[in-house]
Figure 1: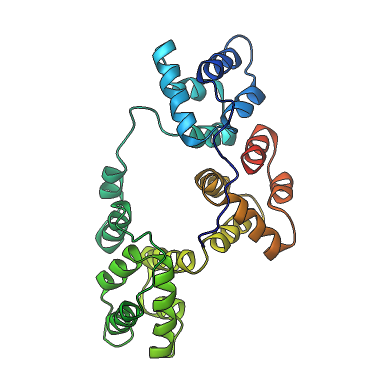
Figure 2 (figure 1 turned 180 degrees about the horizontal axis):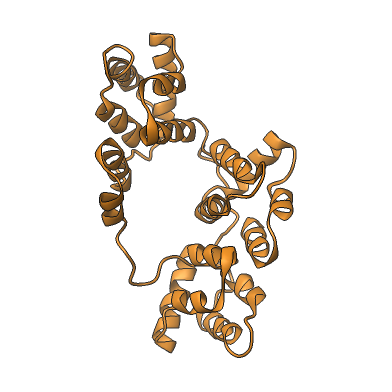
Amino acid sequence: MGNCQPTIVPYEGFDVMADIKAIRKACKGLGTDEQAIIDILADRSSFQRQEIKQAYYDKYDDELVDVLKKELSGNFEKAILAYAGPALHERDLDADIEGDTSGDVRNLLMALLQGNRDESYEVDEGLAEQDATSLFEAGEDRFGTDESTFSYILASRNYLQLQATFKIYEQLSGTEILDAIENETSGTLKKCYIALVRVAKNPQLYFARRLHDAMKGAGTDEDTLIRIIVCRSEYDLETIKEMYLEKYDVSLKDALKDECSGDFKRLLLAICH
């Protein structure tokens, strides 16, 4: 889990002024040079993209995100805006969660947003046993479910610690943790818990599965493709690609070529390298 490879790294020949001039040129005049925009933004790190946005605003007194919105359309627009990041003056995610969710789901999402998860790779076996017992007593061992216990543990422990906890939980209860969650919870909260457990067990496999699910059957879930490929590009997308090939016997890039088209396809393939 600690040996994850990204597809996007800082561009060695980064020249922010050259980039903003090239983007300005690509967006001016008749038509838009989408390939030029892809060539620049898909080969810059997140920090470099933020520098580009700030420099563009400073030089042209224009939000780059607003310029791109005017020039682009469809899934390509959604993907490039997600990759470019929010406008320099953007809405508040905390407020969105507060306004659009409620109860246990809101509490869980707010806990995740606060970023209190232990990011170490240390495992405390005593704590794992304690947490496994707490989860059992909060779910299978009582009438009703104490969701606050599940939310606290799943949102705060590091992934290796959670793996140890899940193993002890199965020994203690005779039930796999995913089955317990399936039986003890419901609705959106259950979906959140299942996602958190699967990510804790194997993050790259989880995202490979999500990408595959987004492309199987009739139609394509472009929003999921955008969210995963953009968000994981600087962390572990290369590793996700390897996991995808291992599990489905086809490369992620070949799958994208079959399911996507046009500039949207070219952008995703460029981010995947």
